[in-house]
Image (cartoon, rainbow over all chains, first blue to last red; front, side, top):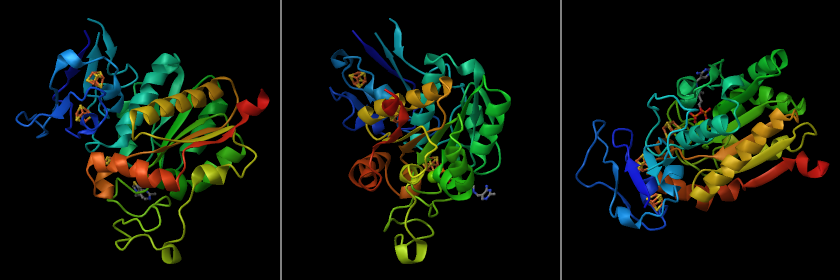
Length: 69
Length: 249
Ligand SMILES: Cc1ncc(C[n+]2csc(CCOP(=O)(O)OP(=O)(O)O)c2C)c(N)n1
Ligand code: SF4
Ligand code: SF4
Ligand code: SF4
Ligand SMILES: [Mg+2]
């Protein structure tokens, strides 16, 4: 099963990966976590649904996302 | 578990200083992936512009030079002619490439110089605070066109691909965007073609990329990517403006 890792310290909370990019819509900006730059990093809501397509990685400017399979 | 998507070796570990949602980071990553995939990292020489990506020399894991504003194509020409084995890419914003560096751009294209230009069109001077660029759309607000670009006072935007397509010289001219995964994948394909043209000694390639500048546009990153799809790409249509490879077939 694929797994997505968000590199929280690199993420700038831009939200690009959370807006209609993920085909199974499992990415959101964390409402309660905050990194040392003051950004709310992205998080995965339901890892089991991930299909490992990499669209989140492709969209991320930093890149703060890693996809494992 | 195996890493299938992650930071490419063509990027250094330096944390990029771009604003959240800035398109520069996406294009950097695509170029960095290609440096590895085409096995050209060891002989690549990148030219960093003046603009928000002035620190690109710290971000790309290959040889880099940072010349004066707009002079990228001239510097790339010199290095390519002295060291034809090197792969030259000049990474430039719209202020850099289409305002102060217009002469260098046009003449390098007219000479069909064997170099690759990567042109970030974000319709604004990002670094200096969101001033009007040659690419700012009619009616678009900037800090020096607060009521919106007035074509009577400030003239019409420059469409770089269309302009250069009026020359016989250039080998490959294409406009892409980084607003959706599909368009990002297409942008990577265009950049790959541009590098391959240079490897095969075909001549001048320019990849124009419509790129989000949420800060300069006064938008959230998500609003900015939508604006590219709904407004910017209507004024700057995506697609190939020249591809001599197709005529050679
Ligand atoms: C000779 C010279 N003139 C003007 C400037 C000021 N300046 C710095 S960056 C810039 C324009 C940047 O805009 P652009 O090329 O579109 O890059 P962006 O930041 O939008 O990526 C200007 C005019 C300068 N540094 N040097
Ligand atoms: S790899 Fe694809 S399915 Fe998994 S989180 Fe990223 S975009 Fe969603
Ligand atoms: S696209 Fe990247 S930087 Fe933006 S929120 Fe998602 S993980 Fe963070
Ligand atoms: S000002 Fe615009 S181009 Fe410059 S880093 Fe910020 S978003 Fe990117
Ligand atoms: Mg610009």
